[in-house]
Length: 114
Length: 113
Image 1 (cartoon, rainbow over the protein chains, first blue to last red):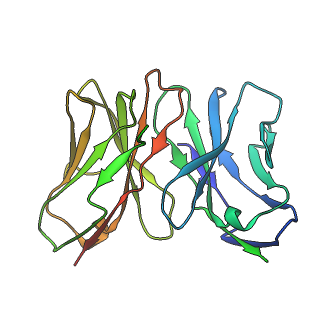
Image 2 (image 1 turned 90 degrees about the vertical axis):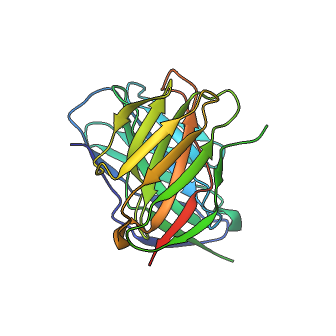
């Protein structure tokens, strides 16, 4: 069975600095998607960034980028120039291309210090 | 363009009761998935509906059932509520094929006393 592990329950970063959130996953499949979702106090789950496993190039979305290491089954999220609005729970997630369910990690709560 | 909407926002029930939660997908979406998010945990997949049928199911008991209507909206029903069913229930919609992004609603907070 596939699993997603986030080993950092909480992290803090100074505003305008850079922070990296860690994620590892386990799967026997070769074709899948990886995601980072943001869940602010409003509870709305928002997709931050998505990586397709067959693509070697790391995905980027403005201040958000990932470091995808397929062999190591590692998928970290880097947030540059942190802003107060980035404070939220961040979930790493996995989805096989064969089915539709998304498997989430337990999340990392990110605090932004002014 | 309205996103995914869910009702009610909050709900309080007692053990043994039954509850129905509702979800309206984003415009143009035809597939609805339901997730349970316990406090301090990540969401867990309950099931997915497409063309009014359950297409895939997670590891949840039969007390959890659902329905999808011709307008693609969906209901989640939970019978014989247990204290452990207290959670945030999230609905997500997407447009087939399934590799498209899933959009989440704001959730329904269910408290079982």
